[in-house]
Image (cartoon, rainbow, N blue to C red):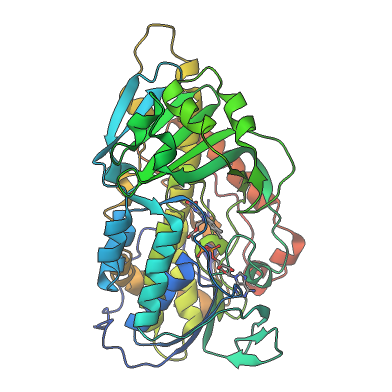
Amino acid sequence: MEIITDGIDINNGSLDPLPIVAEMPEVDPRTGTDKLKVIIVGAGLGGCACAMAMHYAGFEVVVYEKIKKFLRLGDSLGLGENALRLLDRWGCLDKIVSIGNKSPVFHMRRYDTGEILATQRLLDMAGYIGHRGDYHQAFIDRVMELGIPIHMGTNVARYNEDDPSVTLDSGERVQADIVIGADGIKSMCRELVLGFTDKPKSSGYACYRAYMPGSKLKNDPYAKRLVEKDCMNVWIGPDLHIVQNTCKDGEEFNWIITHKDEADILESWSQPGDPKEAVKLVADWDPTIVNAMKLTDTCLDWKIVYREPLPTWVSKSGKVCLLGDAAHPHLPTSAQGASQAVEDSACLAVCLQLAGTGNVRLATLTYERLRYARVLKTQKTGEDLRIRWHNALKKVQAGEKIDPQSIEMRNAWIYPHDAEKDARDRWPAVSTQIQRELEVGNVIHPTDLLGPDRYDIPQISDEEKAEIDKIVVEMVRNYPPSYTGLERGVTVPIVSPVA
Ligand SMILES: Cc1cc2nc3c(=O)[nH]c(=O)nc-3n(C[C@H](O)[C@H](O)[C@H](O)COP(=O)(O)OP(=O)(O)OC[C@H]3O[C@@H](n4cnc5c(N)ncnc54)[C@H](O)[C@@H]3O)c2cc1C
């Protein structure tokens, strides 16, 4: 890939920092005095994390949420150490850790016999896994403790891009210096940012998901083992896997079965399913988990919707941007959806702070460039794991042992990352680069900067990399004409990121 503009070499082929050309300003996030006005749309885990980060950066924050009152929705959700480190700085750690599954390990098992094929440290796998609703409540509580206003039951009807503001259902228009769309997978903000509707695609998979009291399993001779204390297991079989998690030392129990599904795409977290249909898929599997499923009254049918990586997360003016699921939904097997939203929040807050007053566009473009490649990789880990779990036993002859490493979750590389520190360390180089691009009116597309190490997921095979490359090439080809009409696309030819 070769991109040269006006004598400035911006073809480093990767997101490696350019030579540092400016001293990094010394800014203490907790004493920032610049009262930048920030509107956050959506009070999900992403919106709340963003509110905390912006508060600690010293900004004036307000959150709008269309739901009147949150219920305890969803089931198991993982928060990795990459997110916990940031939540700790924002005063939200203790509650979070008390919610998560306390088991030190999780087991990967054969689908029929339940034999353990591999065992991994839970923290290397998915971090702390707890009920999404409990984590969400802890986030909301912290936002309220910090005195950040959350306007519940307030739908944002329109985003206005140039003098950044939102128009509420009531007709009231609220202005700020920046508007952040943390409005989830069905984001309306995404349409404004992209200039087109990004339709979801079927991933070809769906999950039945159930969450129930552990006491339901106590009298079953097989299933009762699963609720004696906190534990986590996954049963893998051809084209199917079942994840089981407990919360509160077995008081609560959750199973999720991921199976092939070509039904219509319905992007919903509340579509009811039939547990009997789920049991039919695994009738001859290990009774420990199948009996637990048979004791289930209700479950959800959740289609795993796929969205290709977006061409950009930042609007034309640079004053409206996306965060969390609105920018980059993750597959459940990545266990990183919420954690990446937390990382986004930390990075964006640091960028806004270091950019200083009047430089919101520089901040949001730098945020996007600092985050894009990492997020793409964390998204891809989810696909990688599902492929390995669903194929592992197809390749093994009867009686042959499986290589435990071939089915382990490979998320350990994600956890040491400190998104705040990373943003501070790389700000001077990346923001200077973007400043130059802004000066020549040629801001490079993030996908054009993905270098040869872009899918540098440890141990991912060349075949798998080639598969991912194909997806990205297709994605670039499919950008609608309206995207290339945007200022950011006009002067830069869209070059395939694959050499
Ligand atoms: C109901 C539900 C259940 C889930 N269950 C699980 C689970 O079991 N396991 C798991 O791993 N992940 C689950 N997720 C996904 C997970 O919560 C997210 O991946 C992660 O928390 C990051 O989410 P987010 O804050 O970016 O988006 P979301 O959690 O989707 O939050 C977006 C928020 O924006 C609000 N909003 C949208 N449009 C507007 C508007 N116009 N005006 C005002 N507010 C608006 C929405 O009401 C919502 O509260 C669930 C998500 C939802 C919504």
